[in-house]
Image 1 (tube, rainbow, N blue to C red):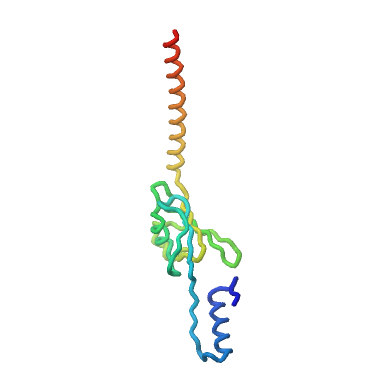
Image 2 (cartoon, helix red, strand yellow):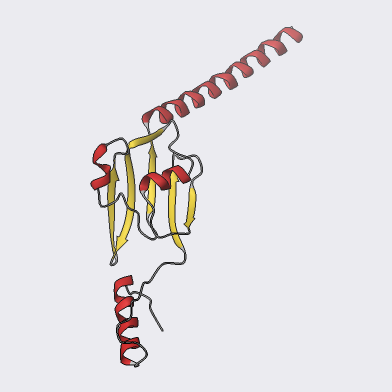
Length: 154
């Protein structure tokens, strides 16, 4: 049976119709479940990557927890969820500290959702400071080497 592109509900109805139409059952109960429920968590989390979930139900809080949590540099108030519904991409933003998170349509994750935790301004600032310190250290090494060579050959 070719099921690509069907929703779970549509597939359940097709299977019910075939079972009733084939005369095998009169009132079948059909439940369709995903075998490989996958979520991708990227950005400022402890262990970014793909999560394979044995069940079909996963919340944003569970996904972030399974990915090692938001790092100290992550924007916990602006977590993004990329979702595709019927070929249309949607972007949702969640504040993980808000008590209203449970009412969001993005709280319960769906198959193939991508969770993005952006880095905050502190990480950018720290990265810039580290780069500047490396450049200063390199410049001081060159100046010290030139002064040493000058004193040796003087």
